[in-house]
Length: 277
Image 1 (cartoon, rainbow, N blue to C red):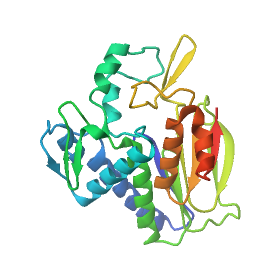
Image 2 (image 1 turned 45 degrees about the vertical axis):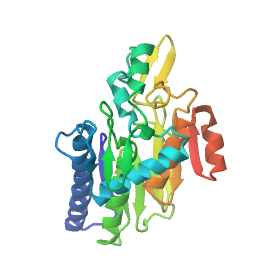
Image 3 (image 1 turned 180 degrees about the horizontal axis):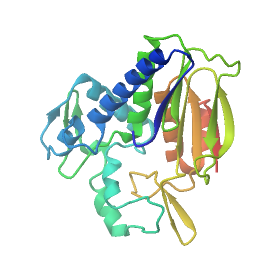
């Protein structure tokens, strides 16, 4: 998941807490093992090394591709799971190395959902293209883990994978779970906003840890796949509340990709959100 993951359970029963933790951890690792772009022997690796040959995928993977295609259309091509190849030229490590315009242009030539062929259950990439489900995988994992918990317990639980989280059951606290939105320039321990969450989910998109800084200009890690450059004038952080984590993450990401229009987009969607600039 590329971030700390935790499960909070309201119970004094240690055995139950450990059982629920094992369920959540097992599901998180299953999804990580199946969809991580960093592993050499999963379905994503098979598709990425297919070199133009079609690959037949299972139903779960096909559902992820269908969802990715929907987001591509809803975002007017801004959300694109083929844009991961841009990491070849961009490294958001807090330094000041900006790739050349030529390198970006050459890499963008291998980006674009419209360049691949997707006819469920078969996908075919042009040589040089890759897919990366990192933009939707974590929220999907949160929701999958939550659905498994509802089958096992009525205890109040909070599934939190790197700040993308969902409530399971009913908290004993009258105000629900207390969740902090990290200050953009904080050290991970400073909350700029406190939210009380009784039901539903929260997801956050932002650049507090992944960015470049050169000549006083900050370049966030959220890239426009059409240009290959970081999205201009985007908020530092957007947190969205929704019924489930996948929906919240979708809205937060689509908003960030809109740059200066992020807040207006979320208002048009009638979303509940918190935006830090």
